[in-house]
Amino acid sequence: MVILVDGYNVTRFLFPRDSDSHETELAFFFDRLARYRSLKKDDISDVIVVLDGGLFAHKTREIRKGVVMVHAGQGRKADDVLVEYSRQFRNGAILVSNDRELRRRVAAQTSDSVSVAEFWDLVTEVCKAQGDNGQAHQFGSVNFIKYCSVDDENDGMGACVDKILMEGSMRLVNTKDEHKKDNQQRNSNALSKKEKLVQAIRKKLG
Image (cartoon, rainbow, N blue to C red):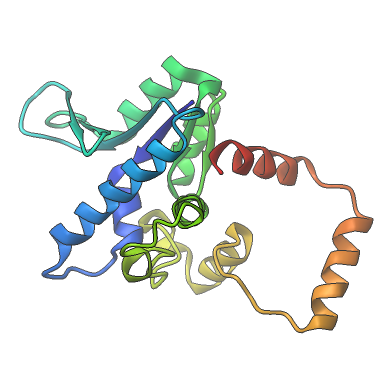
């Protein structure tokens, strides 16, 4: 399985504020992805981070901390390269992005996709389960200041709240009674097709 990462879409979500620690944040980002890939090497063959533009007209590829980093090339968008990869790997790839249009295009190539929050939670869980706490609490489980992607900002606050609930990126603390009621309701209803798909993706990634 190959993980395709919509580079700038993901990093804007994880680190939404400009700061002097930007390079440190990016170093941590690649460190954590590399650690995750290493721990999941039996299931994940490559993690490919694709970025817009680059120094050259053609697509360039390099290895950074064990993670493949691809620049789309001058005048090219990462989205188009990600769709090309999804066409190449098809159902052997999972896209990480909050860009709904890109996720639709990738789905047309039979590749699955997952939100940034969902993916980063799984990455953090896998690394912490192996005792790799490191800087996880500094940057991991992420600074969820910005729950919506740039593409969603024009939808308004209502859409942001809906996205939070739908993506499950917030872990709400229920009382015992509420938790029991939630479990009873979940057990009494058959999983929807979407829920089954989400579970299947989580199983692949986690």
